[in-house]
Image: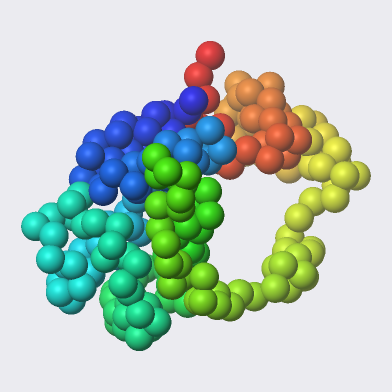
Length: 214
């Protein structure tokens, strides 16, 4: 596990006690399938939702971790629409529509788990009524649109080979007149070739490569 994932795992463990028991149950259910980073985003989304519930008086619980399941069952579609509007008015860094869809999707996953998968001692669903099942989340773009935008920005197989060869040999000729750049190239050529080869053939992010250790 790299440094970022370890840090997110520790942050996740710190935040889980602030959540209701049924959200902790959901996170544990998802733990084998999702990374700590993804689950941490889920928890952050739930914090926003639960804080909003308390602020709007839709729950009389004294704190977030004491919001009962019954308060989720009593939610109306109007409340979900109001939450969507609340998200739209928040100051967010990312694209507003994408951010709202992600948070609603996180809620849908939680409500689906509670109403369709998790059971009480009598084998009944933990959540008897799932208002989030009525919520339609429209994609802000289609996958093929994203693919079209990426076309021309990605190296194809033969281009990958050519680029690695350029890092390994061709770049030397381009910096031949620059002694400092040439010295740095000769010093780091093998390292840089290995890093570039690893990134292009593994799909690792630069941050993930940066955090690798021996």
